[in-house]
Length: 181
Image (tube, rainbow, N blue to C red; front, side):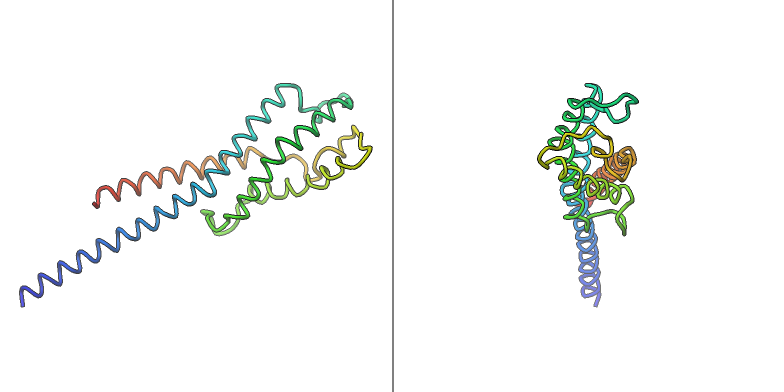
């Protein structure tokens, strides 16, 4: 009887330990996917946009906030940067959100990600118009989104905080896994 009790207790302890390890491993796998498929790419892409934007502005590219009229050359430079740098990165970010929304930390899509999607969608008709034969407008309405100023700082803060939080969770889970082995 004692032998059966000791064996059953040992089996139960092993089972519970293995169950706890499996749950932690599943949690770690999810965190790893969140980092590699959603938050990591989004954070890297947002950093690329932010750094490119700063270079553009430092080079005198942000012409639409100036009080003086915009020249044809300035408008063409804006269209070039928007078409070849900013929108391709922004589109990739939207695609990442749409393709991996199941990996979000929240139960719903956070506001900064909704705003990103709206920002990109509102620029699509503007960029399409730039492709029309003879387009040479220098009017601000023909070059900026109807959605207004995109609150990039909120998006950057959200992505940085989410990424850093997940990296901490990943490190915590890895440490726990090491202790249990």
